[in-house]
Image (cartoon, rainbow, N blue to C red; front, side, top):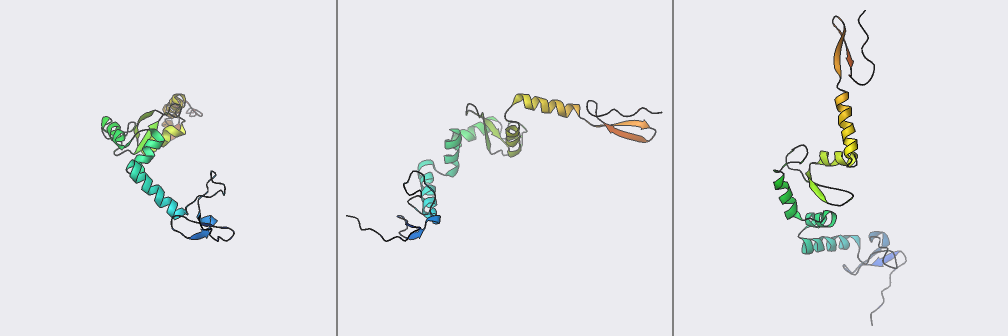
Length: 165
């Protein structure tokens, strides 16, 4: 028979470090009837770190496997296939895995900016094509309206420069 512990109201016993702490020092756990985890936050964090190291060889491997279904070895192979650069802008040392949000399939390794850019365009080729059209159509140019007087104008947007009088 296990001896019962006296735990004050609003506190909880951590089975790992053997101390009684306030419940705010315990992570939330909806699966537990009390709503809190068995171990305090520092103990929970150290157990999680240890498990990631033991099962996956580190946090990076765990993250890649859980999120994208690939490991560091596959990441390195993809990066080598790309020549060690971002698949879009060819910047050195890209660190972000790009994947299709509908299928979950990994497409390549990108730099921070390119990965974020594709995300902002919601992986839509139509949106990207419109952005390209917009950029090409709004190249601002200097137009001579009087000798020595220029006005900035765009060939497809805005108002054309006034005619010289």
